[in-house]
Image (cartoon, rainbow, N blue to C red; front, side):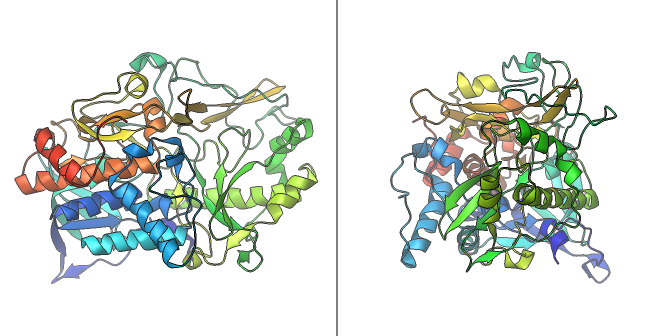
Length: 532
C-alpha cells in the first residue's frame, strides 16, 4: 500500500548531501506546489525564457485536475474569458481523444455552457506533456522545510530531504498557502464577519432547510457527524473552512470495475444521524453527485445542496496549519470516512433499496490511479489559507466593483461555498451551516464576470518582495468562494508565472513591475483580460 505516499508529507529521513554539505540548486523562478495553478505558472514562466523548478511535496503532479476532478467547472463560467493555458489544456485533451478515435460530446472551439469532461489519466498525460515541452524541472517529494529571507527578499528554501533551492522569484501555488506562511507573509483562515468588509454573504449562512430530527444521543451528547450545538453569532466569522472530500473516478463497467476496498473498521453508529435523516425524508435522493465522464466512468463529488454527502464537515479545519504527520492522518480519516459511507449507503436498511443498488453498481477504475490502489491521490482542499496582500478582494469585487486597472485574469464562477458546520439545535432539529448556493446571473447559469487585479497575488511590499500567490491569494472567504475553482486558478497561475519570469529577468520587486509591460506579456501568451 502506498497510502501515505499519496500525500507524501512524511519527513524523509535521508539527507541529500555533497561533501557533507546540502546540495544547492539555482533557478530563476521556483514554483512550490504542482497544482493546476502551479503547472500553469511553471509552464508560463518557462515560456518566458526563465529557468524553472516546480517543487511538489507529494509524488502526484496536477492536483485535483489529474486527481479525480474531471468535471470542468468552466461550464459555469464565461469561456470566452478563459484562454491561455486553460484553453490549451482542454485543446490538448480534445486532441488526445481525437487521435484515439473518440468523439467527445463537446468542442473546445465552441464557447458554450456544455460540460467539458475528461478522464484523470488523460489529464495527467496532457500535464506531463506541457511541462516536458516547456523544459520545466519537475521535482516531486520535495516537502518545504525552511525558508531564508534577507529583509523582504526570499532568498532560498530548503526541503526535508536536505536540498536547498535558490531563486530570483518564488510562486506559492499550494492549495494551503504553505510557502507564504513560511515566508511570514500575513494570512488568515476561515470566514470573516459581515462587518469586516460589509459583505452580506459573510458570517453564518443557513440556506438549507432544517431537518426535523435530533442530533443528540440518549445522553444528550452530539451524534457523530454533528459538529456543534451552537453555530455562533450570525454576523460573526470563525476559523471554519468549507468541507473537504475526494473526487473519485468510478465505473459500473464490470470489465474495468474494481470493488471498493473494505474500510479498516466500520461502525454503523457513526451514521445514526444519516439514518434518522432517511427515516423522515419523503423524497430521498442519492447523496453523492455523479457526473458522467468519457470511458464509461463517473466523477463522484460532494453534493453542495445535499444534507449529507462525501465531505466530512469540519474534517479539514486543522489541515492547513498541521505538520506533515498530522496531514497524513487527516488524509486517511477522509478516506476512511468515504469508505465507511459507501458501505453504509450500499448496505444499511435505512437507505432506500433503489439508492443502495444504484451506488453499489459503482467501483473504482482499474485504469486509473493504479499506483495508488485506484484511489485518488489528491484530497480536494477547497479552501486553505488566504493571504492578506496588497489588495483584498471581497464580495463587492465579484458583484459590483468588477473592473480593475491591473487585471491579470477574468473570473466568472458563481460565489459558491460548501458546508462549514452541522448544528444540533436542541433535541429536535439539525441544520447545516456555511453553504452559499451559487450566486448566478439571471440569464445564464454562470456568475458575473470580474477582473482579478495583479495586486491580489502580491504580498504587502514590507513583507516579501519576490513572492507571488495565485491560489491562496488575497481575498475574503466570500470572494474566494467564487475564485476557488481550477479554471480560475489555472488562469491566475499562468499570469503569476509570467509576472514571476518578468520580475526575475528585470531583478525587480514583484510589486514594482510596470503593468503595461506585464500586460504585453500576458496578451502574448493569449490571456484574456477584458470583461466579456
